[in-house]
Image (cartoon, rainbow, N blue to C red):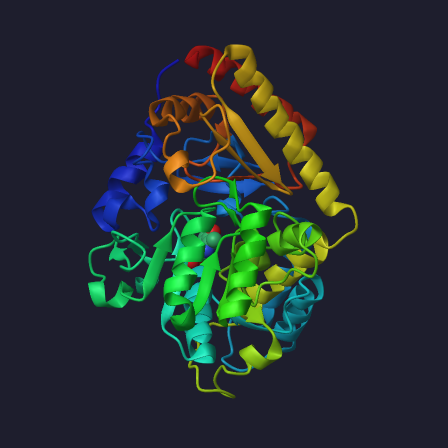
Length: 435
Ligand SMILES: *Cc1c(COP(=O)(O)O)cnc(C)c1O
């Protein structure tokens, strides 16, 4: 067979002339794993096709949004209809209310939401609101959690709990992160000390309750319970960044998972994105009325957006949420995800490859480590070389997982048993070659 020109390589070469690194978001460039990014031409259900016409089983699902798989007919129809009625008005629409109602209905901590266009924007706005509502400046975030690329959040730990963070990106002045304290995830002692030192100045603690930006790491129940108590005692707001976990790990998000273990558990503010847009640029943040009414035009905290509540995006998000609110949806999705994770574990065990994995709802993660890690330092001990061989082995067999070992994976309702079985048999072959 003659080898055709590789269209992915051709497009990547052209892209690199036009767009920094050839991509519009860094992880797409395959820099961690090497090789040529696949340029996607179309997708349907659990699959997408690259520029060479090669089909992949998709486990990134646009990094989380595509919980119904690609091209769900009901969602496509809702989007087409909305597009015919107009792309954007800059004036309110009824569909924004319908989407807000649908979100609030499933997440008991929310009384009001504001719609925005990206998770970054939602996280940044939630922190501004937390600061405005408390009249305080300092915030706590945890190492390994990602809350978008707002300046004050691109920060790593300073040299001690008395010192605040250092920027992790050029272009972020040290002054901008001087109010951000970075702690180790799941480290209760650090949290206690930080509150003892800074409690009266803390506006909020922001956390990914199940951290999907260091693959898949759960905050322990005791850690979460105590975080909630400390915030309440010191008058700081607990901000749940559920951009990834919201409507993904359960209909009520990760907060519903913790509420099962901790009576009356609620965060103060919640940040949402990804699934609520169903693949369109849409995100939100919300909480109790008294806090949300601090936002402009009612209150002193400014926040705005030309495309916020966009009519096509809200149609996509609303249709998506209506589908996943069907009874039994999450049970089925969770069962599928668990089948995948169990199959991967068994394949690794059979090949003698150290491996651990976890999942909740339609989100999963795995590590080339014998035990599940509890914080970023432990995650980074996962074997990067081996991960790269695993990634490319799967990719060569038509299975597309996230091209970096610190990213979670996603299963959609469109993944058929045959897709999961095909993935597990590909993994069996790859694990054998890794052993
Ligand atoms: C994806 C993500 C964000 C950022 O959302 P964007 O839409 O990419 O700006 C923020 N927080 C978490 C937890 C995320 O997973």
